[in-house]
Image: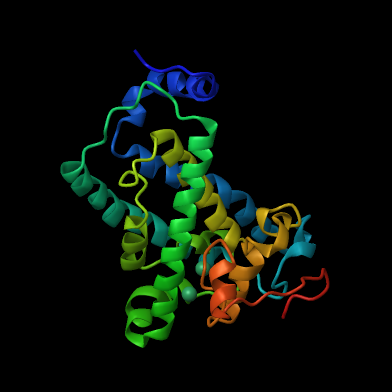
Amino acid sequence: MPDFTAEKKCLQPAIIYCTSLNKLVSSPFFPVLLAFSCYFIFSVPFALLNVVGERAPIFEYKIQKQCCPTIGMMLRTLGTTVYNHLVFVLLAVLISNVVMPVPPLPAVAPTVWELISGTLGVLLIFDTQYFFWHLVHHKNPHLYRWVHAIQHDYISLFSWSTQHLSALELMTVGLWSNPILLKCHPLAIWTLSVFCIWMSVEDHIGYNLPYSPGPLVPFGLLGGAMAHDIHHQKPSSNFAPFFSHWGRLFGTAVTVIPTKKTDRF
Ligand SMILES: [Zn+2]
Ligand SMILES: [Zn+2]
C-alpha cells in the first residue's frame, strides 16, 4: 500500500493526472517532446520581439541594441535544432531505450522538498560539469573548433541561438547529470527539464529583463542573460551556464551594471 503522508499528498494530484496520460508519459520520446515543446514555447515570444525590432515594448532592455537577428538567422538556427533532434537525439533515445527502458511511473508523488532539492541538486551538478567542460573547450583550440565553435557563430544573441549547437556538444552535454541515474522522481526530472530549458533560453534571449531570475536572485548568484551575453561578446569570461560561483572562484566572472541607454560593456 503506497505511503500517502501529508507532504506526499501535496503533489499526488499531479501523479494521478500523469497516470491518466500513462501512454504519453511512459513513452521514451516523452522527455524529448517535453523539452522541445518548452524550447519552442519559450523561444517564440522573443523571436516575435526580434521581428518587430525597435518597436518591441521591451526594446529598452535589449543588451546589444545595435544588433537584431534577421529572419534568415532565426530560421538557420531553428533548422540546426530541428536537424539535431531528428537525427541525433531521436537515435540516442532509441539506443538508450534498449539499454535502459523507461521505468513505470511511481504510484506515489515525491514531497515538495524532494522535488525542489532534486531539481536544484541536478542543476548545481550540471552547472559544475558544464563550467569545466566549457572552460576546457575554450582553452583547447581543437576541441573549440570541432565541438563548441558553432555555439559562438553569433555574438549578439537571440532565443533560437540557444540550441545552435554541434551534435557533439548537444550529445555530450545531454548525457551529463542524467537525473535517471541520480534516481530522481519522474516529476522532478520533468520539472528540471522545463526549468533547464527556460534558463538556457533566458541566457540567450539578448534582453536583460528586470523581472527575470538573473536580476531577481540576490548577490548575483545567477548569471542570467547579461552574463551569458557577455560570454558571447568576450569568450574568456562567464563559462558557467546558470550560477556565478565557479566563475568567481576561478576569476572568470565578468559582470556589468546594465543601463537602459548603453548596450556595451
Ligand atoms: Zn551560448
Ligand atoms: Zn563558449
